[in-house]
Length: 181
Image 1 (spheres, rainbow, N blue to C red):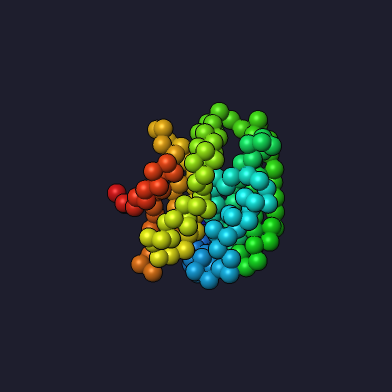
Image 2: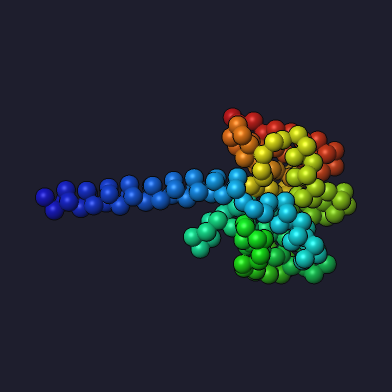
């Protein structure tokens, strides 16, 4: 009997937690579509404020609220900046700065991507503005990448028809839809 009660209790806890995770995801999607400040706006402001290049940006849950997280790299100052911003005001809620020298070798691709982004004068903000000419929706995630010699920006949109992902080559400025396998 005790064994059955323990199993029942574990099942109830697991079931309850599953609903909490689902609610967090639903709330995040609602926040994307109703945020007063867009991800592109906070990226543009952050790049100006920190004189750095945005390498990753997304909406995430932090301390029980949905926030924007933007990662930037300042090559001149040799630092990586991670900030969390309020989605209603764009106000910085948290800031962490680390030295690029403390990074591992695997992040070298990010540094190459930043250099190419600067050379082409085309970063995440510019990619979002460019893609919005072709896509009806709001960006909720962006990532500057360097793979196999190609530098591109991966964008995730919440559109009226659901979530869609695109890749924008920073040299050719070609937008390519990412298809599901």
